[in-house]
Image (cartoon, rainbow over all chains, first blue to last red; front, side, top):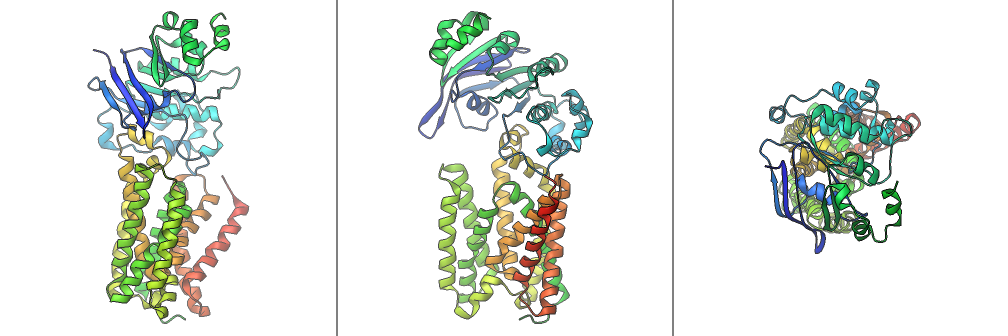
Length: 235
Length: 256
């Protein structure tokens, strides 16, 4: 039985269809990349899966599976009077924690995502974009979820020469053994890390192993005349 | 302007100030400074009805405020209408309605409050309710903060962000309904916004921010009342001028 199975999922924003008839399944240990142009429903899909948006269709989650979510950004601007440590400790209800495996402490998480311990006392406004993304990932992993939903920001926030957020994700996945569903804007990453790829453009364009389904024709269907991507493919 | 103020009234004012400051720290995180301020005006028609028909103005104010907060909540979640626009219109209409309804000699009191005129029963009510609001806010602070900074993260943490938001708006209505008798409809909003605005300039952590905001609310109201008594001024505007000048001072010490 798959960890997560989605059948004919549709999401409406008012009368506008944001997502239509999407079906796919995720097995334990997989890394599924969700790709598609801007406004194609990638974030909508993740938000429907966590139950933040009403949707039609079937979402079946295997019993005992817990989800962690890494959003692109917060609902409010980041210049908050809130420290890294305080952020990681938000909403740690005891009742909730007993449902999870033992959760990590804020200190352990900061180390895991490769930030200096001083960031526990640092205000969120003083985090760089890359550091903040790591903190968001840390928040999601604190309760040791079995399925991680990762929404990558459109612009890359990694600093050249350092471990990228994907390297970090990969490293943590090896350690924590979680299954990943990630929105990606970088096809190189998809080829390197994804076991399967889901192409969206409000409707589902393809689903399968990247090397098989990401044909130049499919990419053109997805992005429309993707010269850029031919180039990527032959790299 | 001011008659003698009892110790009990002073305690009630301090607690309302603390509740307002604490509530304000969350309201500012939610970026509802202006909506919050406008919202406090919606109490005016309720207050006026209470004055006209001689029932407890607290209940009149609360009824209208609960209506106002429910409207905000519904607009935010059920429709895609920009909240600011509708809130702006709705609440100025409430203000106009309230000022027409209020008996002229009591209009000033409704708008600016008069702590010395608050009855013993209302003072006790104020103490109990303000303490209750403070306790609830302390109890839900982490959950509330998470649902404000990210509704989606609150959702994955199995919280109910929409419910928390509604609870917060209800607490907002309660504090305003209590405080309005002390500070008046026009000034109540400032009791919620200014301490948090000052505190935000001076702090970097949530714990420090909320604590300082609550303290400034409490100390500010007491200082405002005492200062006003000493110089024979009206306490509401005195409080605002005191904390308002603190805000401008705090701009020079910004931490974030």
